[in-house]
Image 1 (cartoon, rainbow, N blue to C red):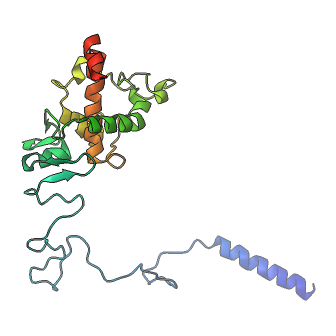
Image 2 (tube, one colour):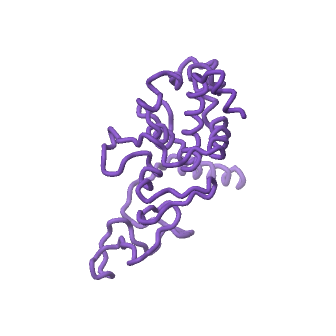
Length: 231
């Protein structure tokens, strides 16, 4: 047997032995040639630390800090809608962001506001129509009749069909504006519809609520009302 064959056999056996090794548990620190930022000095939520006098790693905002973005701790401030050029009054700020009444109801049974804190002006309704056609029409249909009126539901065989929002249970007296907004924000209570909070802004959710009321009203409008609305 020449040296080449010996070397070939030795390498083959070595490869076979390596493949058969399943390793074993050890308490030794593993070799970490490229640590990146895997190990770094940081505070985790709810940790304790001697660095601060109160021993807490989670810090409170400094006095007189002004909230920015979606942090709504400055409830004494009014909210101005840039898109619709409307100012939401202080008393309506909580409802504007949640669709519910502050301090009432529960997670299982929210207390919805009856009417939108946003005035349904022409600009709001036109925006609502645009957003509705993008996000709602595929499932609920252009007239909010649900069922198989939405394009993605025409050949649906497995998923529950969307409800008909032209029916009495979904009119404002039984399905208030706040509940429509809340459903868009958090999804339906029966989980058939997911949350659209990441796709639709707060302003646009209220605009969709307004346009839905237009669809409901137009389905029952008289010829005279329809003619006047198009003037």
